[in-house]
Length: 136
Image (cartoon, rainbow, N blue to C red; front, top):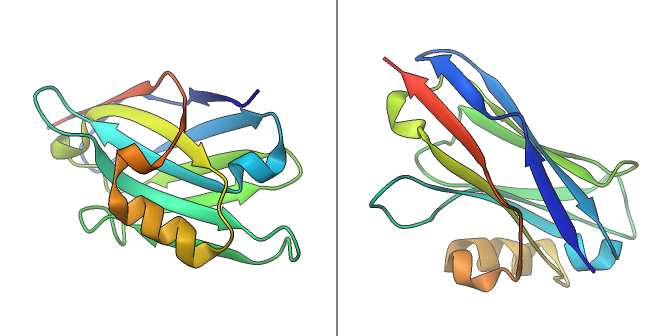
């Protein structure tokens, strides 16, 4: 049974930073592709970032980002804790949304990236979400 629990959301002024965490429990191979999505009221769920953990080389990982956050957000993973992080810098009011952690089992970083580009429906495991609010 895979469970994902997000934390770290909150309210911040524009230009500020937040770090979100996603704690994953369950079979590690089921969560070797972890992604962050966000959804604002009235909008579709949008891909923020994804990371693939290579089981054969724990120092290797593949990351991919949505266009709107490239250069401002950084996704990373602590393999020892099976926790993924989303460091969000230079936050803008349009970044306000519910942020969700999602996971899947994939064979490679290329497949993980393709799932991320394919959208939220390509991920089977989801957390409950954490709210991020950025004020101007």
